[in-house]
Length: 389
Image (cartoon, rainbow, N blue to C red; front, side, top):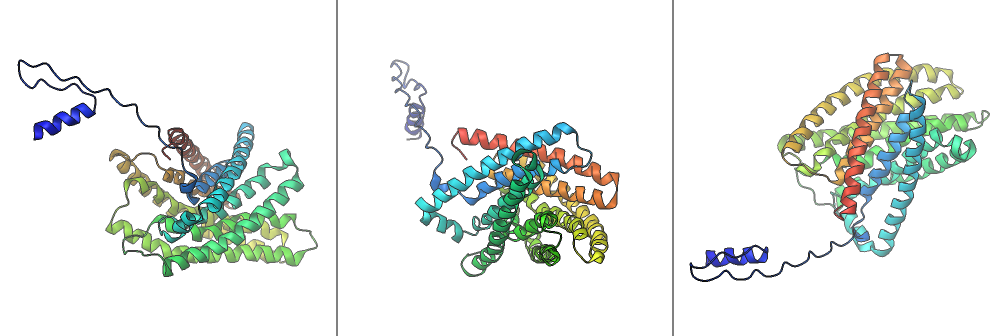
């Protein structure tokens, strides 16, 4: 029986059969079947995690344009990357709209799945990051007024949707999702980090409000500070759950890049404090600027220190995962946006502290970000062309 089974398997694989005895010729091998075509990626399975590609591309542009002492060619390159981010955002928005219109049942299943629902936090962060890079890189291309209006619109949409997601996803986790004691994941940080991205992007709009609108400027500034606080405190409740999970049970190989998501609230909060301090100079209360500038350094230095510690730990675990056979997955986009927030955080520290070390740190992290973006983008294109994303 074993011999017959082996012969059948060899025949199915197209290999020639062995002689059954010394006198009989081998049986003819059946013709090998042509491989069936792999179906194209289905719109039904086009999940919210695709917004991570928008986030990663946009922050590659914005963080590079904000580097201190950057060469002139880098600004031109970042402008091209920003245009690519706009294109990717438009494509993903259209695909996600089609997903909801044609496959609403699947979209509801995603919301009911605790492993997928947190990725809805990527939508507001994609809007916010594209808006922020538009304000930074768009004026020479589309004009300053159009850039400001675009950023204001995307910031408003991103902030409102970010607040909805920051409340809605934890609500679903508490009431609908079936979550085990070891199901905690760095992905859980995505919905609660969205308000922090709004806190970092909003201060740039303060200077574009009329100088006579002192109340509006102060309200926007303090509103961003409130967004910073709500996201920071929510993050402090979530990080112990993530670390506890890692000490009890390691992540699957494909999910290992998600460890870098922890860098997101760390780098983005440092960026937010720096940007809020910059914008405070435009509000009536002069004491705000002095206090917030000091706070941005006193807060940012220890937080960036912890971010570097976590980056080293995540890098060690990633090397281990690669040695054990980790291949490409969409989680590779975690190599981009979280690192980008650390670039902008280090840049903010260099502005307020004057330390050259912070400037060099930002440049070094940007090199890692560029390498991570190339790896994620290349892997995505290869997988998409092979219809395996």
